[in-house]
Image (cartoon, rainbow over the protein chains, first blue to last red):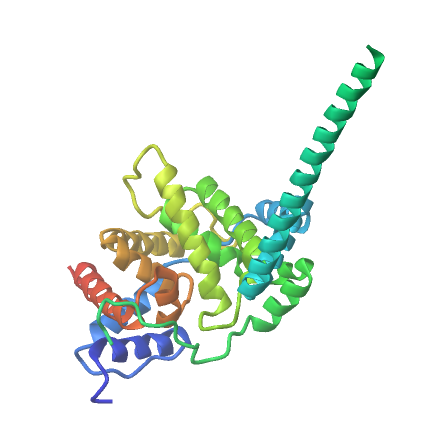
Length: 124
Length: 191
């Protein structure tokens, strides 16, 4: 008991007080425990209004699909972030895919332009 | 140990009594209703004593539970109990509400006398109202951090370890705050 600090001993006395006991404490702490006792008796619990309770319950129950989608994305991101190697590989593959697509598009457009030029020259 | 630095999150000394309900709600969101009903009044009381207005308290309470439901998949049993985690959300929500207010509240603690029990004894009500007014005045005169510790401990029934999680302080610092707050209150109440 002696190697615990005064705030620790007071805290333990309050734990017992809130559990419904009347804790035995040294005289030095008695006025503080009495103040704690007065506080716990005087500060009233405040029930929320029943209409309010029902309204919020309904909002929680109908929590919107967008929030669920965001949660799913968040969960996926959290899962992926646990494997940085996978993220790097996915990033590299995505970059390569974008590069290949852009190059293919450029080649296709160039060929098309040349084809159109050849076609109009043949007409003349 | 009682220094102001934040200690690493300790594991709760007792198992989290809400853990089964939390796991159920993580698997099925509709099971969150159990946790909501369990903590609605306490979160509301915390918001009301901090904000001093029923409407503001209801708004903060609603925001707290919606945020908790959104964040619930991320909750892990790694030190803080569910209720400490929930009150931390409430604490942040109330702090945001304080910041967004245009006027500064002059009476830091309201007097919640408007809902007496229907069969209450009038003389008892008057005596209780006087006692409550005296206590509220004394609590209102405390500094912000001491007042928060008193409300979380005596209105919401959180342990010092849980309050430490809510306020992002060490348990030792919370115990020192509680000790000083009660010493201050004892002096005020015996004057």
